[in-house]
Image (cartoon, rainbow, N blue to C red; front, side):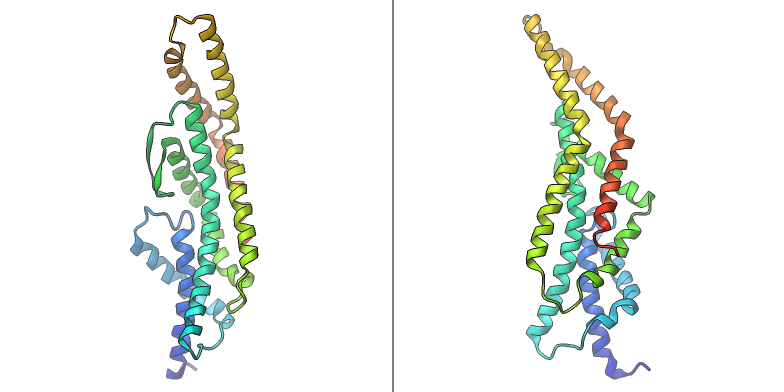
Length: 253
């Protein structure tokens, strides 16, 4: 039976759940993009907190008797949410790496715009890949795994446990290196294309030094590069989604 005496404990638990969930929502890809208004993300965080409350409320202990204890408990929850959300965001940076490599190899490096997912200026190819990835995450239902990761975070990181700083740092380095490796793998065909193309026009410039071969070959570089991009785009995004799903399964049990 719900009584007035339970209100402080209920409010305390909901505040902690909201602290963890909102930290993840603000940073996770797809559901936490910077292009989504802040009010929408806050409302989504509150709704998810209401849904998770009956599932995880038993994991929390009583209200700490001191203000420093309460502050440390809230700080722990926020830190867990930031770590999980940032881990997912690091996977998305693979497309940023791949897009910039593709742009450099196809002569489109100077065509830049603000990337809504990264919040920085980047090549248009990188922007296109990021927006396409967000669309595919929703289309393939992978956003359900993001929500499942929120629930299973209470299995991996029990409230009140000692914060595993060393494990977090090792995982962060591993995920960052993995994201860079995935980005290079996605852009590997364009590295080969750029190497072959520039070696070819370099040989032509030696054979015909009186002709500005680089200015003549630039439209062909862009045309062939775009044709190659749309030829292998499906395979690229499939490979990325597989890597994204594998990373998500690290937090889902």
